[in-house]
Amino acid sequence: MSDDTLAPELEELKDTYGDVSTAGGASQQTLIRIGGARLPYGCVPISTSVLLVVQDGQRPQCYVKGAIKLPSGSSPRNYAPVQMAGEEWWQFSYAFPWEQHAHSLVQFVEASLQRFAKTE
Image: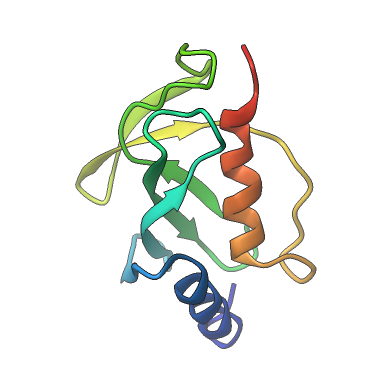
């Protein structure tokens, strides 16, 4: 995602989530931290911080803060801690269609977090 397309995306993220900050990462990455994104109904906690790693031409990566419990009370599968930007974040996998020119970063975050609505 180029700087020209990233600026309006950041504004939309701020309009949606409020607490949004950015920093440069390795290899021309932009790190976008969202202070609190609501998780699907029944998850504990009810919201979490999100870290997006955006690099032009690539699908963003999404990480969450802290251990999340699913509505069933169990922990998600394929959910593991990683070090990103000097902090512990949790990575997870969830496949859904996303195209940079057709979908926004808000849509990406919301679709990513729907992974936690799955019952396991």
